[in-house]
Image (cartoon, rainbow, N blue to C red; front, side, top):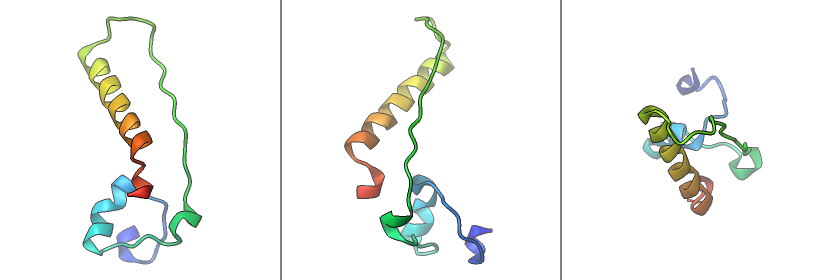
Length: 75
C-alpha cells in the first residue's frame, strides 16, 4: 500500500532502505518527522540459554552496539 504512492507511513530506516536506494520511495520531512524508541530485553537469569536464545542475544547486542556507534539516520 505504501508503494502505491497513496499512503504515507513511518517505516524503519532498515526496512525502507532498499526502496529509498532504488528511488522507488523517498523520505519525507527529514529528521523533523522521525522518532526514536528505546528497547529493553529481558531474559531468565541463567547461563544455560538455548542456542536460539543465545544467538538472538548476541545478534541483538551486536546490532545495538553498531547502531549506537553509527546511527543509521546519520549515514
